[in-house]
Amino acid sequence: MIDADRLKEQALVLIDRAIGLVRGNSSQAPIVPAGNVVGHALMIVIAIMTFLACLTIGAVSLVQSTAATWQSQISTEATIQIRPVEGQDMEALLNQASTIAQGFSGVISTRIIDRAATARLLEPWLGTGLDIDELPVPRLVVVTLDEASPPDFAAIRSALVKDVPGASFDDHRTWVDRLVSMARSTVLIGMAVLGLVIAATVLTVIFATRGAMAGNEHIIEVLHFIGAEQKFVARQFERHFFWTALKGALCGGALAMIIFLGFAWWSSRNLATPEADQATALFGNFSIGSGGYSGVVLIILAVSVLTMITTRMTVIAHLRQVDGRTGDSHEN
Amino acid sequence: MIRFENVGLRYGMGPEVLRDVSLHISPRSFQFLTGPSGAGKTSLLRLLFMTLKPTRGLITVFGKDIATISSKEMPLLRRRIGVVFQDFRLLDHMTTYQNVALPLRVRGKEEATYRAEVEELLHWVGLGERMHVLPPVLSGGEKQRAAIARALIDQPEILLADEPTGNVDPPLARRLLRLFGELNRSGTAVVIATHDLTLMDQINARRMILDQGRLDIYD
Image (cartoon, rainbow over all chains, first blue to last red; front, side, top):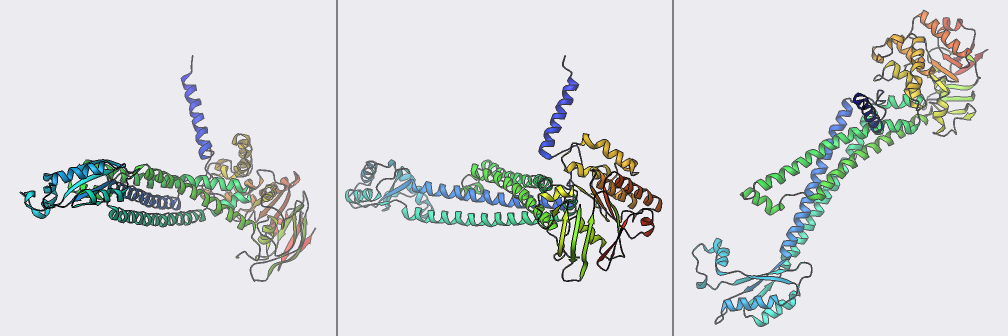
């Protein structure tokens, strides 16, 4: 018969050992005291800096994907414009232009903007109740392009000009080029801001860790004087500060993720409202994407590891200073 | 064991606090280091314990020149030396028991292997009832005894004590001195820095007297 209590006890011992392996020997008091004001301040500083870095990563990721979407959307379409020509049937010209365009490889489809749609397009300028036949209004054919293998724009343009009176072909190249350069500039600016925020995070974490370590120098010295090896002393502190940093970074990162998810939720809940339309026009569907979330996880880990490395270097530097003290260099 | 040859020490641009100090601490020896306040007793102890390097001269500890010793070797040498600091240097977040057991813990020993030994030593120095108390609650004398117990727990080859009876009453001072005497008889060399003449009169031991940075030895 299985002794349930005994099994439970053994399981608890195993869990205790596992925690001990991860967090050090838990059956004794930690060599580095668990929490003090400086430690909490370090955790808060790390949480704030991680939060800011994660927000920046999310924003850059958003701008990057939005810029790519702008570029992609506008470069997958071109427009044929046909101006009214005396004695020519506009509908026939539209069909002819559409047929010519479809004959080129790289053109997926064409769509003639009909009278009603054209009237709607002009509505903001000319008002409602417009009879389109009374005015010499140009008509449009929207050409959908294969983004992977775009057609020969020059050939389409010359064929249209040659065979369809009053036709012109706009491949949106000017707009695409402007948008591409704007998107690239935006992403570059975002990357520069991200670089600055990460540099500020690194420096803040380093100085905050060194500040927190300054209050523990007496522990380092006692351990050193009773014969602890350098790696033992360093391990005690780096383990302690790694957990402190991880807790802070997780708080900051989690808060940033909540904000991302909150915006995505708000955006999806307000799809038809003017506010959401404006936000969607600027930022797409406000989704950060896997790149942004991966960046957040990376920042959390990087901040924790950076704190650990700083701690180790501070301990080693202090021990070297203690060992290297001479009468000449010592202040007394 | 520890040898000084023409050792000099100065702090910064100041005058030499130790001048041409030569001495030899032999195994199983017992000596007092004395002199007026500011004579350099603590500085000499710090040189003995390798927390200071001399401005000039040669110091060898267990046959090794400390000027050329590697940082990896230093902990191994320090483990052979027990030190009682004047300011105790106990860790305030650890109990008396944990402070005394710390040298064994940093050597990687399992608690089960030393628990009884630590408890026995704590009883022996009169801290049996204060085992699980944090240092801020201990009196000066109790802190002193805890610091002594920590220095002795791993049976060092040499014990350096800076004013070990400075914070205790005369009966306890005599008891601690007997403890050092017993330790010495069991094979540990002892160096006690003190300016307490009555303490020195109780044991017939070598006296190293520091005066204005110079050391005179009376065997």
